[in-house]
Length: 295
Ligand code: ATP
Image (cartoon, rainbow, N blue to C red; front, side):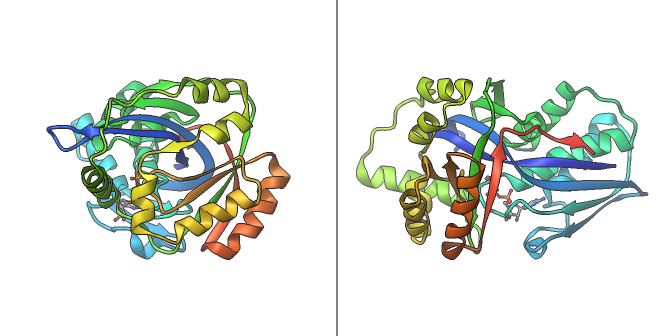
């Protein structure tokens, strides 16, 4: 059983004040893009995991792996002991702000649901996904969606046509927890008043009508200053994209991957070639794309 699952970029990520439970309320407009991990699940006596790909050595091979946790949570939900040999073919950058671990968890849920013949509907998988992490439900859903709360309450958003993106992968990752902590520190230090996050209606309308120029101008990520504080080289990457005519340049989620909106496929190709000089790899990509899909 092989499942293909997409990476995401947050075209709007607005972070509210810290809550009593330590989390932040978010307005999170997720957009799935055509960079995929594959999760392969094969019948076995217990749950095991292997990872292939250039950054495989940075991915845990135990219960710390979100795909393993997902398979265990699904077996628990079904009330039985099941096994599966899981193989992740990784293309989504690790700790790159593109929710690769969450994608693998979603892939494992779909793959094991099929492999074990459980036949659980997507709504049940969405509930298990929400317990695994706030980005996991979106990796199941795909497309473009508005996430509220910690990101786990999802409303699908309408889009028109295809948006052309370039993603610039950095060497080494950034810890999501550290980026949020840095964001809180920077806000405290500057005495910034943090209001309740609001949906950007202009951005939502640009997605609906396929207006890449407006979308590019409205891209917003409250975590970007913190990611830049922790990784100064991102300034140069973002600036290079702007100089090369990107309609918008933004740090993806908690970074350090940067996302650039291009005018069309040819522009995305040109941008990716020029950006390759400032980062590990730059890939032309499209969005939106479906969530976890059985191949
Ligand atoms: P997000 O954008 O959801 O905050 P991210 O894209 O920045 O996350 P991930 O690639 O999901 O980061 O990985 C974050 C950490 O989670 C990794 O450093 C790794 O230790 C751990 N991890 C657990 N399972 C996986 C997995 N299947 N793939 C990648 N990392 C995993």
